[in-house]
Amino acid sequence: MPTVLLLRHGRTTANAGGILAGRLPVELDDVGRAQAAAVGERLRPLPLAAVVTSPLVRCRQTVGLALPEASPAVEDDLTECGYGSWEGRTLSELTGDPLWPVVQQHPSAAVFPGGEAMAAMSARAVGAVRAWDAKVAAEHGPDALWVACSHGDIIKAIVADALGIHLDGFQRIVADPASVTAIRYTATRPFVLRVNDTGSLAGLAPQPRPAADRDESDAAVGGGAGAA
Image 1 (tube, rainbow, N blue to C red):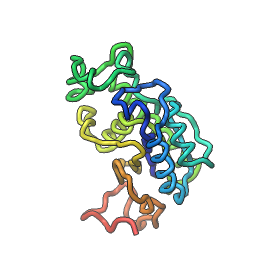
Image 2 (tube, one colour):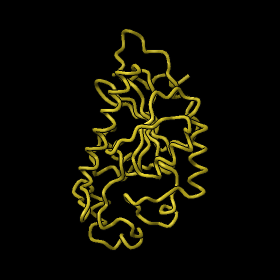
Image 3 (cartoon, rainbow, N blue to C red):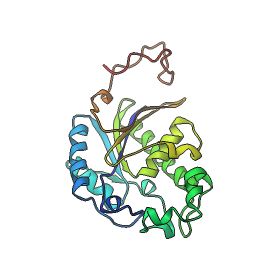
């Protein structure tokens, strides 16, 4: 099956100011624009079959700077969590909210006032990525690479699902601005290849297929030889 490269948008003015942007139309700051250009240098050598993005401006800006020749598809289900009344407030202020420890310790039970449940956020994001992965496989074959540009909590939720851990453990995962997380889905299980990666992506280029006597869903006992 294909490999999805989950790209978090570059740093925004809200990130820099410690503000929870949510679905507000915040834009990349100077650092974020530089991050987007830099991740583009890492992505462009790869044979990308498709590019998909959250509809929010910070993701569209990131894709535009990183992959200016791409024609990204917009996927609404990759948009940021609906934080409701938390949106636009500072993180330092939100730490005093009674919902804060729930979000930190038991996010599967968290429902933002006037917004979205974190469990619903996870379900729609995972569903979107899996649907797009199947579409890319059907159109471009099992070795295809594709990019999905989204948001920190969205990426963390997708990784938690791929790792088979409960959503309550997703706060253990980190997805920094302009980082790349790589997941390959197979018929049996997903393989998490990179998390929060800011280095070279060359090893994610398609490799020779496994020997015919080993299903692609099988894990390499002993750890395998890695990328060439």
